[in-house]
Image (cartoon, rainbow, N blue to C red):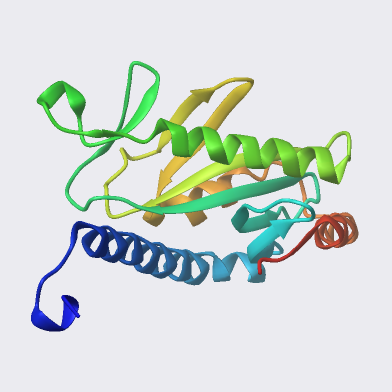
Length: 195
């Protein structure tokens, strides 16, 4: 009844904030899907909103390279517009903490690395590289992106506008349609649509 009278409780404000984050996240994932679509014409196999069997987290985007030797596990982030995405003391921030502002986002980067490791273990394909990637909308990322250190490796952190170019440049071998299809079939076997 308080809601009908115009009174908003702290719990209602928190629920609204969570709903707003989900809405921004869904819009960012849809924007990333549109950005990645041209890669399909270049031989990439591109899938969205997947779940590793037996796990609760979702994987926003999975890409199989046209050479069939790599899988990219990508997560879309919609961070504060106007705040740069920076690497400070080995940690990713939205906003520069050296200038008195900035939110540490490194835990989100590390989560993508964990997802990639779990996908790699489930695929169980020696010789196939599984690359973690964070795609940032809103908060500008330095040209060329960031390589964020995480336990056991690095995570690419790229602005949305650079993703397609960087992925195309990363392919160093000739396309192998049969190998890419076989790898894509394995991805389909271990990742299903998120529910």
